[in-house]
Image (cartoon, rainbow, N blue to C red):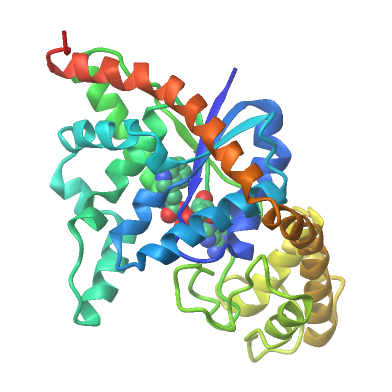
Length: 333
Ligand code: AMP
Ligand code: TRP
């Protein structure tokens, strides 16, 4: 059976981008057809300045939201990365497989490190090595497919390179995975800054729709979305990014494949924005309701995470042990 692995960082509240780019497919497709593991990758949240109490809170919230969105513990494995030691163990071996040049070429590293330096801050070493930890997340589970938004494709490519290199040097150990991404919604943009992605770790802004936003907040954010100076409604990602983003969101909400087709149904921005707002509100409604129920039952969520970690450990342990042996480490007697 196909093995799927994906993860989400507890660095902020989950957004519409997370949902359309990743989570919705985990729920509707991946857990139905494959042996799927989904992880709250909390070790990754430590690569940037963070408040410990907040990371802890957001980890629990992300787990609750993923269950609310429809991940079913009877169909998939949901767990917290730091509960399974194998990620950190394997990450070190992969640091001994990757090169520093490879790490420095990662677009996300260059962007994040650049922003941090501009602010006069320092860059944690773990931000540089982050893609190696991500590769460990994936390779520890003999993963075939990694469903992610566009921004993560380069990291999955790196994971493939590391798997191939490791296998060539030390004998076949890892499955070589591939990234999969949705037809539309793979890159939802910030409503106020349609040339940058809607990222949860960015400052809470009017351009980000959070999954738990009240309906009126969602409406306000969508109605105030930055559009472009034109008047007609056409789909043009390069010249009209604000409009294109709204069309993509509407297409993705309705399960349509083609934002250009969606554009044909509109003569004005106002009508389009109203429909986008309502589509997003309706998309999120069941999720918010289910979330409210689950929040009332933290023991259930804890139990899901405990079972999930047990299952994850049982898969990862032998794979990582095999990698230890392949690299020349002496087994403990
Ligand atoms: P992150 O929020 O970085 O932990 O991402 C979790 C998942 O959501 C990854 O698969 C990302 O590629 C995806 N994702 C995050 N932001 C967006 C976005 N604005 N549009 C589409 N996918 C996204
Ligand atoms: N780096 C991913 C992100 O920022 C999160 C992540 C960590 C991940 N490990 C993973 C995604 C393994 C898929 C598979 O979104």
